[in-house]
Image 1 (cartoon, rainbow, N blue to C red):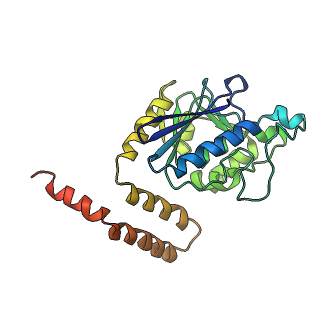
Image 2 (image 1 turned 90 degrees about the vertical axis):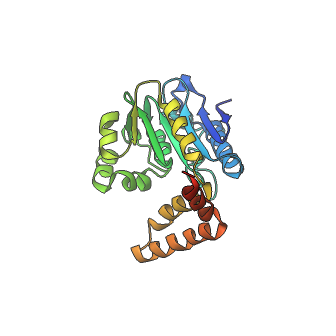
Length: 253
């Protein structure tokens, strides 16, 4: 078993279980991650997921041992069909619910790409990010060239992609790659606490606003505003907004 899932009420924690390989992802792990998040997104009781690596490392990227062996059985999938799992597994998925990365140790190469796939990154003070695959001729093919610039901006993204340098936690926070810094050993705990907070909000509204953000990224401002209103109107019409307004009015009565 290279991937496990622990569930607590509405929170799912998906765990990469290859600590002896620095949680490098081979085919079995990629498939396990894909299936875990597919199940999470389909489960109506699940609201927020946390992605964490056991053993002090978030993820060191693809398992280059399998790549070096040219093993089709163990090597990561290289399918150009974007509807199929990516080399790292779930990297092509568009989840309908929030996902938080709990980053301990290294989140590098494909591990960096997985962290960028998440909505929020909680990083320990000793965490390190980086496009380490630059050093070995391994391209970013799990969204790194697309998501990283959207998170940190074009100039910073090109710096990281072209140099392959290490980005320690403090710098990651400064450039927006990490959202929260916590002491060593507390990334999972803080990510799950944040997930519980998010899961307590009215979910239809929360998911609608999240969807509007993603759909608007490649639109003009005018079209993005239209989409935001269209999605928001569905929330209002659902009754969730009126229910929330009543709770607000009655909170002190």
